[in-house]
Image 1 (cartoon, rainbow, N blue to C red):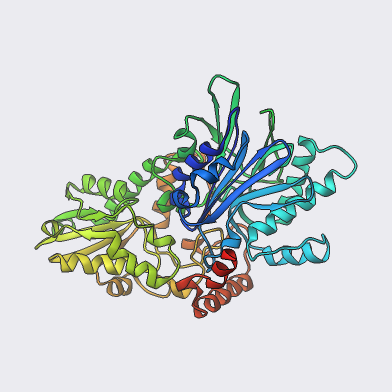
Image 2 (cartoon, helix red, strand yellow):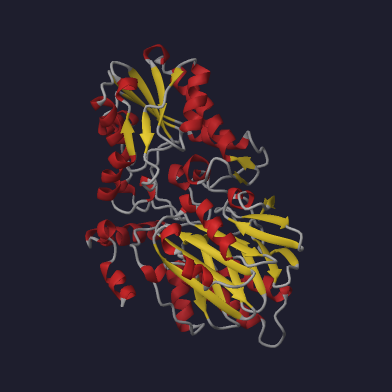
Length: 504
């Protein structure tokens, strides 16, 4: 899970890109980067940290041009805090090409070998985004050797990328002297949307991971980029779009609607906020079926992403709704923090219980999901310490039992609390009196009722079904590498070697 932005404007884009990253900061807090283009020259600044910490006034002054891309990074599959893997990435052949990407490639090791042995390209980091950049660069080079590069040749290169690459990817790229390229994988797993504006100097175009980034910058949300589609906007603002994949189908990651996306975003025709309200309705049905409504004194959300579901659940069951936890907004999202120890410590720093709302009450706490169980266990403990008589716990999402290999950091089954445990056993593990999970059918229905055209979803972390055909061997390899990474200590402390090299 990362955030990407790309824009072709009529005026300098450095501030636009910076503001776009701020609106997408929830998608990645590990690193940030911006590349702008002026003529045939690129200007780049990227580093570790939050957007506000990476960019200073002096950095912004060094990013001229009216075309650019930006990225905020969330490391996946156990990768550590390595400045060398901050995006965008750059390669000088052909033309000069820079790329930022949200998602995860499932055949990156195979592609890495092909790059070295066949395409004669060197990959300098462990990032699959750099692999993707070099695959695109190679296909652009092959398609433009004898003719001038034009939109048709660019779309042909993207079609070749779709043929070679497996996994989830939403991409923004700059081709020096030519313009902005954006494309989405043939399954549409990771989101990407298109916006348009006219501030009095001609039409401008922007692409971003979420519609909130477009609307927050004054751009009109036009539509989502279709699965397999590529969009190219040249340096003069001329717009081109083409479907570049055979048999493309829309399978959006359903976890976007549960947790990842901002509630004020719209993804593939679905209001994230409306979907979360529906999740609360269906979760209320499950609570009623258990016959425990009369035992619940108050419903409380874990801020912020579970608030719509908790409000709707309380309303449907005619129960009191209270804000029992206050969130420190200067602490990052615990789910996307690397390392169990870091996550556990940050829960108490992030949330504080209001004792008067708990004392002597039976509380139903609603969270968006339960992944490793670390956060849930601490929350239940805080509720009991605040005086709760009973603590019921409800998850707006089904049990997370399988690895996610499409850009969310859920790489190993044994790290997931639901793997191999019943609901009662999970409740005991987190210290709750009762645990209620959403059904996968209910989750899919909640999204589909907003947009009936959505027939399929990427649900692998709940169902174990991988739409791109991931093999058991690949999953085993991912788990092995994750275990090795954690055992080395990098998962807890980051890569000090990388930090030292960057400083040097």
